[in-house]
Image 1 (cartoon, one colour):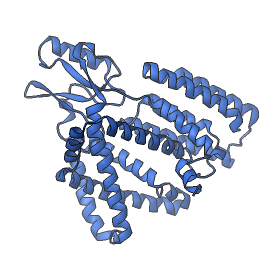
Image 2 (spheres, rainbow, N blue to C red):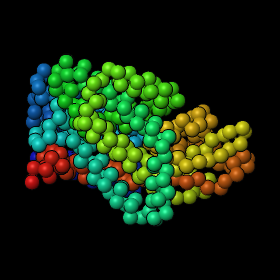
Image 3 (tube, one colour):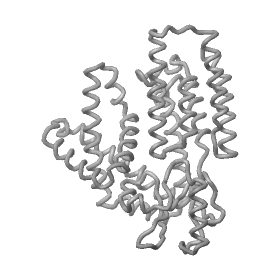
Length: 367
């Protein structure tokens, strides 16, 4: 089946990469064309029974890919176009591709691994190369803020326990379910999503809840009193400090540009939030995915909502109106220079096909 899907995958990858680079957009019409081709190929060449294992796996993978894609969009990790593109790729890749790393019920997690890890490595190297020594030292200093780290420790400690409990419950239903939450990449991904959702919905109550859960864990979870747990937990903390604090601080230095208020356009990703306090308008750096960044000021005081889709036409008009009325005193707003993620997603899919699954398992098997 892969031989039939490759031309469709190449068409999708090339056209979406082009439109993302040129217009910073993945077009729905291209996704619909590919879905139609997928259905035609399956109707002509395959006849999957509705109760067959292959059909159940296809539906399961699609549902989980849809949920993951939606959640990553909801917490502003990628745009709705990228989320839909990932879901379509999940449909196109036959399960036979994931030979060296099949994950039950959600084999398409491998696409995310092969996309996000190379993307992060590229991002990381780019940031380190172009950031000045002064910026690196400042980012390091800000990353080692004790209060921020303690809040991170409490949040991770509580969320990891909840994930372990969920894994145990799912394992009683079917051992294969708990296997999903034993994958290190999936655990990190789940924590990122949960942390962002809980921060936004619960605000300051999130950290209070995390403290309560952490205290309960100290009494009821004996697994934490082991060297293996300490090693794993310390590694997790270091990953989050590095990814959420250090790299994002540097990102705000080298991936932003100043745009005149009157030149702002829909789709631009703001690198600063504009808010009102005591009838005066202010702005401050906006670090996406920074731990507890949403706790500094109630969202209702913001002039525009923050989302992965960037500024809306309404947001731009509102900012221009406030400027004309001289209610805001600044002339520019910082916006992020975004990278065409559709290109990285296409590369992740090609890697998955070439190595028959997880790139890093493939590399490990060479030695």
